[in-house]
Amino acid sequence: MRIAMISEHASPLAAPGGEDAGGQNTHVAGLAAALAGLGHDVRVYTRRDGAGRPRMVAMRDGVQVVHVPAGPAEALPKDALLPYMGDFGRWLGAQWDADPWVPEVVHAHFWMSGLAALTAAGPLGIPVVQTFHALGAVKRRHQGAADTSPPPRIGFERRIGRLADRVIAQCRDEARELVRLGVPRARLALVPSGVDLDAFTPGGPVAPRTSRPRILSVGRLVERKGFADLIRAMSFVPDAECVIAGGPDPAETDRLRRAAVECRVADRVRFAGPVPTADMPAWYRSADVVAAVPWYEPFGLTPLEAMACGRPVVATAVGGLLDTVVDGVTGDLVPPRDPRALGQTLRRLLDDAMRRYAYASAALDRAQQRYSWPRCAEQLASVYAAALGARVPAVAG
Image 1 (cartoon, rainbow, N blue to C red):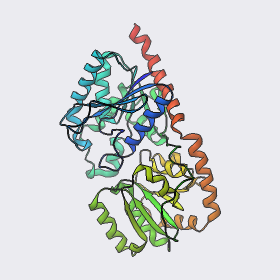
Image 2 (tube, rainbow, N blue to C red):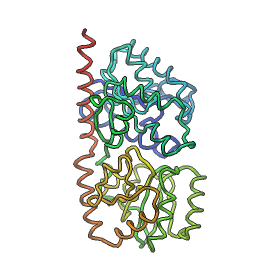
Image 3 (cartoon, helix red, strand yellow):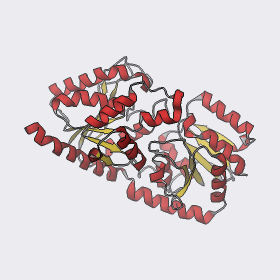
Image 4 (cartoon, rainbow, N blue to C red):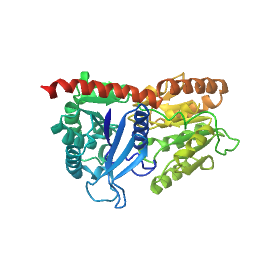
């Protein structure tokens, strides 16, 4: 099957850790590679964000990345890209109208990609599958005035959800949000993100560590990820060290350092800065416990990566973490924004080696059995086939 994936701001070629580079980049790269591994022909379309970008780059066999000329050829925050989505979609439509390579299915990632996908695919009768990765209504609920999304976002998401042939929910919590948004249940499909089980393994190099028990937390340094709550929780976990891997915001790092000083735990909190993807498995293996404590999280890849490395996870009971972390089996779930509950849970787990071992074994098994990229790609390929099959009679008629 010829599959076009649209990821307007999150290129699969970008290194995670930048301002808008994170889980979606990793997701698109992993999914595209897995679909190609199943024999599909995949092209990923992302906005050209640099004058020197080639028009097309081979990511691997079966996957081409196309840089679309929409807006200035420079890096822009994703919230500034809405004015260029019309040009993005019209360029795609013209390309597919003239090029011998025409997709059978278009899979849009993020809401602005959905706008471009519907603009391009609609006149050509190509079915559109939509993954939102995050919803504006949820972001507005948790961030309030700090939300920098374009004002029309929620309305556009509602319309995209009703026009797309299929909408992918990555977890049960997102499925409920999509139904509230007005997406017809019959068009919803629940397919989680995956994890690279070749890279994230329990065996392999281990990052250097001290003799103290280690709590590791990974992610972009933004307030909603809950790193300040984790630092405050360290007051309840004597003798343990906390390592925070992520970046690159110096202002947020300074704020977190001040929080560590105020809580008198600065000597036990370490900032590792941005860590290359290839080095992350070694960091996970160095941890006794991995903490993922966001205020909200549409899905969350770091718990899966930790589980694939055979590490127990303490996570907040929000979003996708409610699906990936099985409370009392693969790790522990705690309320968001509750440093005391978090600290007490971390301390109990660090004091119980047998429980950590049991959690780690169950976490590894769950990651391998349910979240491999080939499994997720097979599920999505079935969704694509269903969307294509539903369109064929209408097109023929």
